[in-house]
Length: 397
Image 1: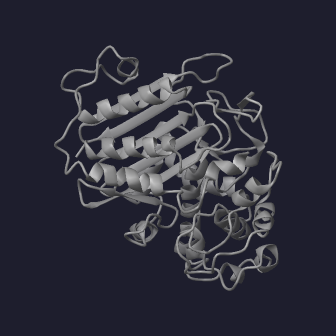
Image 2: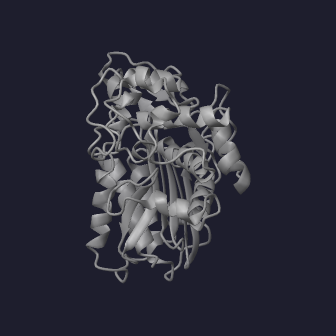
């Protein structure tokens, strides 16, 4: 069941935070693992050849790739950039059916990383003076009241930062005996969430809810006059010249698409490529590649997509796990933070992080080991992914 992917709200980013704490315990960037074995499969798939002088972070990422592949992941793609150079690895196959070797530029579902792109489109509306972050969404969407019955005014800022207290429609679907895998409109997502009580209103404690972004998509679509995928294309994809980043639609899977698998309750292998539930979804719908994820977050951090003031706004509130559409993790090298997002949907995991100064970044995509539906941010696999990413970044000081 797709809904089970997202796990409990309170633990959604706990794994990533724990990973950052693990790296902080290293006490700095001088400790380096042993150089990788140049004969290992991961080393052979990397850009360039591994040598005794290979940066220490390479060993961390190679070991991560090897470990998850050994555990059953069908594909692992990683690209790391830093002052020490660029390193990449692609291991596994695109699909179990054709067994074609996976490539660095293959497309994959990026899950919740979609939210960062929606947030950028919202911030563009703010820059243009079409909305204000502290305006209630009801000012622009009068139907919002009847769709989900909020306890009071719900600000755009609180929706972006998961501090609205809005129930998560995934939690509702998980409670259903057969939630299915049908395409759902933004309104249907809000209506599903209405079955659960709110935990508060604007200014609530952080509580991750994908429904926040269904509401934001309705806002963006009303003010732009086109669907959220087209808006993201105009605001982010076209300006950066991205060729492989797009919103999931109703058509067949694009070429060079990685297939992610799960196992049903009857232990049958299920191919989750382009599941209808993601079609047009503002919380899980985007497809991209590992290099284009790095390009995207580098441009965002640099101020190419938004004004610097808007980027700074997305980084707040400081000392919290989540800003406005961005995850933040502690950077032991600079006593600052890494910014980005993590995305997990059935069969897939994706991650993109960049340091505050833009000098270090990593993106990953994994077609996870086929397993029952109950996987998500709070499982050991997600902790391992976030931990490897933060450790590698911190070893590239």
